[in-house]
Image 1 (cartoon, rainbow, N blue to C red):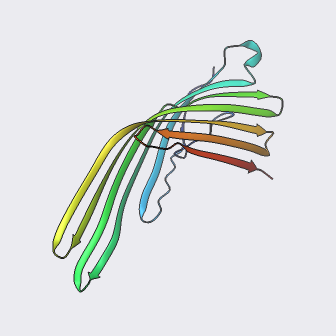
Image 2: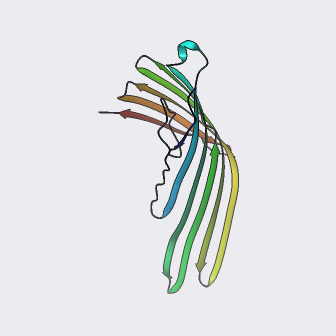
Image 3: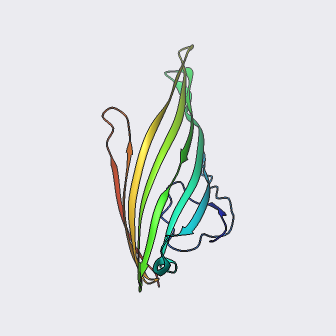
Length: 182
C-alpha cells in the first residue's frame, strides 16, 4: 500500500492516472483578482484484487480552494461629481474527489466524482452624487462534479466533465478537452 501524498493542484483537477507529484502550492495571482489556491491531499490505494494491483487504483482525496477579489470598477467624475464603484468577492470550497483509475495495456480510463460544498460572499460599494450604497450577498451551496479521462499512451487524451451547483434555475456546466503531447 502506498503512502499518502500531499498535492497542490488547480481548482478543478483532472483525475490522476498514476502517482501524484511531490508537495507544492499553486497560486496564480492575476490583476485585479488574487487566487486561486488549491491544496489537496490524495490517498492512492490499489483496488483490492491481485490482478489489478499494477493496473488500477482507487484515489480518494480532500481538496480546499479559496479565492479573493478586490476590484475598483470606476473612479472619477460623473457629470462633474466625484464617483466611485468597487466590489469585493470571497469564495471557499471543500471537496472529496473520488476516482477509479484503470489501465489496460496502453490505455488508461479514470472516471471521477467530486461532491463539493462552496461558500461565497460579494460586497458592492457605490458612491455617486454624495450618496453611498453598500450591498452584501453571501451563501453556501452544494455542488456535484464528474468527469471521465481517457489516455492513449503518453501522447493523446480525451476528457469530458460536468459540474452542477444546486441552486434554483442553476444550469449544469459541461466541458470537453483533447490533449496531444509531442
